Image (cartoon, rainbow, N blue to C red):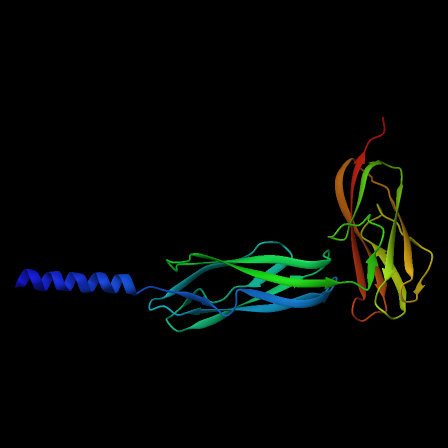
Length: 233
């Protein structure tokens, strides 16, 4: 009889260990940030809840790229408790449909790592039309001679549906210069920009230039310039 009692206690103990465990639940499998104009930052939240019967430990909420930052939720959630992870996506350098990911690691024994999609549709008021700028709004300039300018032309079309005034421009260093010949654009007109690139040293590097507009949706258009400087033989 005593053995039966001890066996029953052991079974109950094992049952408690089996069924007493944390369980992560998310309010949604993805965060859709909707339409964003290039260069704008937009925030969203991921709601985490512990629907298990033991404490849920949240080890980390890690974005998959530097364009997304996350404010970490609480380090642990008691059964029935919830909290949010606040995220912010920086659309600078992106165009079109964008998909990023955030990984959540916990002590949930059935799903220690959970992936959440971050979706956005990045629009522009001045859209590249010449193919020299890729999907990440980058102008590539290859094999530039150190100390000698290599000029590329960038064309941006006004797709906003309203007139746009180019109020100014700026470059990140003296390696770049801009030549803009037209400052007022009617809808569907094209802005032509000459970009002389003159590396000071050999090797690969990147810079940025900025176009400032009077359009409230996208007051700053940012273009990244990547180049490779080589010494002349």
